[in-house]
Image (cartoon, rainbow, N blue to C red; front, side, top):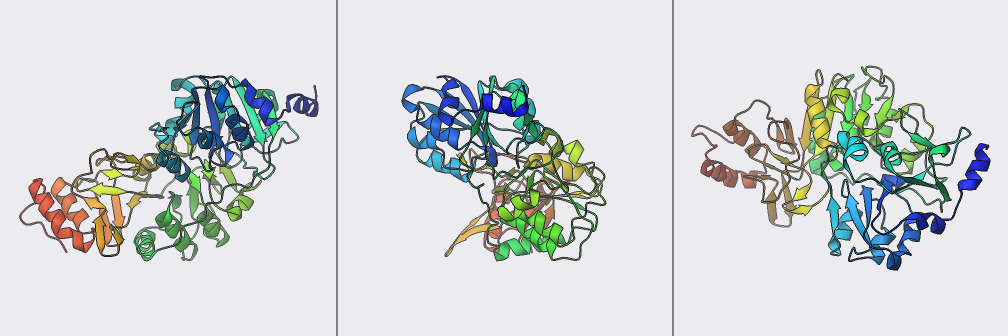
Length: 447
């Protein structure tokens, strides 16, 4: 059978495709911009017929129909490998959103070896090419692992999905697909960089001064990492490389400014390497069939020993809170879940292991609303807070008041160093707390 004949034979409507899903099934919904849209609507229409359909998602970018129609979670049970804003909105309605803790570089193995068998995998893909392949678009991550584990694979074609070259495991052949749905070709989600606040600029300046020509850059999500990328684009730095988990608009700006040649990379020279991308049309247009970019599965991009093979790997990530012992919480506020571990721990490890590399975890020193100031450097993390980076792993902490290198430091040194980059109005209270906790020497000092 020829490719087009096979395509027509497997082509069905979204309503026909979701008929294969039964009560009690485990279903993967795709990741990031690859999360299904038409199939989601069709499955939502079966709410009254189904019970306990368990759905996996990863950084859900859309308001999902199955969650709109089933607020109680009786028909559709939502699971997330990494919370998004849309997931937080679902949780705010009272519907459970069940998070699974991950070390992102290990996720393909979890899917292949540990999770319950997948009954159905559904994901948005690019149109089939002349060789019979559907490219996964800007979300390689663990997509291949999902399609390998699933009993039934359904692809939803989106003509607006940019073709993202490998790497490897960047697509699936029609022979591995059970059903094809031609979707509604929705636009990809737009994630513009947040407006830069003064605190973002100050933190970015402190980090950029640590970067040298030929460094390899990893940026996490958020205003501060983006500020670093934009500042690099306007700097005199040259011959930088990209080895990251997430590709964002800032990388394109660095490339367009001539800063990101990749010529000094030890692995994948000249290539901008990532596992997924989220940004604006500016980014997606740049990625489309661009041989400069290489999308790999996350067990390559995020594996610390792989990423660290690049000399001068500079990793930049965000935090919610840090305590005086150096424990970094980047995913919850107490027991209220915000995001997830993602790849932060992977890249904190990789930055330290890289020859000449540096690992930065950054945040504003405090949340300030009107006259109210709440320090984000705290005596101890609140009950229920999740430790993303253990105190033995995190290294350089950066706020707008400075940076502190923690590796090898004792508890009293850490307390002093972190208090000195805390908000000035919080420092006296933090000193008193450190004294009460027995981690403050008599001759300790604050600036």
